[in-house]
Length: 112
Ligand code: 5GP
Figure 1 (spheres, protein in one colour):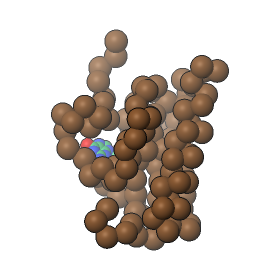
Figure 2 (tube, protein in one colour; figure 1 turned 135 degrees about the vertical axis):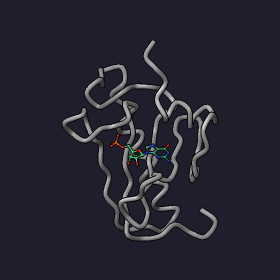
Figure 3 (cartoon, rainbow, N blue to C red; figure 1 turned 180 degrees about the vertical axis):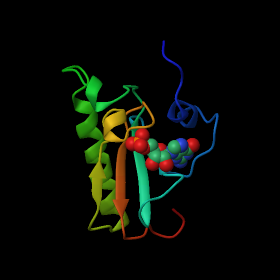
């Protein structure tokens, strides 16, 4: 068992996060150091460390995150956004828990 990451702790409510969306499969919260007007992180509830670790058994997870981000954006009326996976230290990945960056210069609806 590897050490729990900061995102494990957010998922288990050990440390707080500004959650904007949650369902059985995914949690989405605001990045603590936003690099855009809206900067969210979508993580699967099923842990894998990185895109580098995706196997045929877990290949649905990145697509699932993209689908959730797409649906969330539509609900929020956000038309333009960037989706990014950082892969490995050389790819800028600091937290070894799979996450999809959602960046937009559009704002979330009030209350989010
Ligand atoms: P990475 O560079 O691994 O792709 O992205 C990790 C992201 O997690 C960074 O953009 C960083 O700002 C964000 N982050 C790191 N620690 C925390 C935290 O404790 N809470 C939140 N909400 N975001 C965090």
